[in-house]
Length: 380
Image (tube, rainbow, N blue to C red; front, side, top):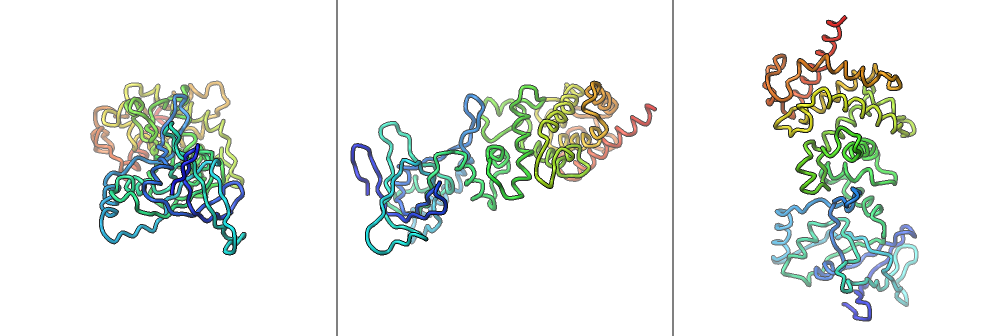
């Protein structure tokens, strides 16, 4: 029931479970209408300064429609809880009398502030956004649903919980890639290994010195940014991950597997020097959509990444001539590349027949490395 005072308030019987003093956990039920009153969905996007805000993926319309149709039917069972984050402005009053176990759970009344004219809802949905959308569109607004709520004022904690809750579910890889750099708590090994490539991808897209500046497509990008972006972020992170985790990768020495420490400055310098040289070696192929340039294609980026591992291993980044040396090495290869027209004779493929297939990735990578070695041998 909703109690009206000077400040609108939703009162709900709940169980308080104390797992950590910093974030009380409340177990309760809310109607579809009440859930819509107190909690909103935090869509992933970026503010004017380019900082990441939100964390939720876009709506899956078909899935939402299927849930709505089920909710509007007969004999509905809806056991999965919606998980929401609430602000510290909520208050909890313990019930009197027997039945409370201070170790496990305490029964009482939770008071949640309602929007008071400004339309801003106090809570954010952390898990179950598709179900919450379906509930909001259902004809049965009095339908009760289980809700788990934890107190978290910081969006960082909300993102952390969002990633952990969805760790074993098929989240879009691009969404995970963009959220990972924003998490500063220990992550499962599978995700922590992806954190450095994700952070580098973010920096490559946002730093004006980067040859990839504004070219990487991110889930948070608006229409204007998506019009310029030509490379999917997962392509970049896959290229970086392979170089960082493979002993033969040129980025591998910058990471200490024993303690997880990473020489981020060294990584950044190596990436800027190599990919800026790639951009300048192939100016007519750089920054175009993959349909116009296979250099900007997933297979092209991954193949040039493997060439980076071979070529950069012999470059002393501290040498004043390092940049010129990288460009000279790439220039040896340039005449045999067919990024925007012509035919890769050795592969028996037209330029635009290169596809995102393991076989094409292997064949193109092998050709680039072999062609570079042959050109160097012929130069001697």
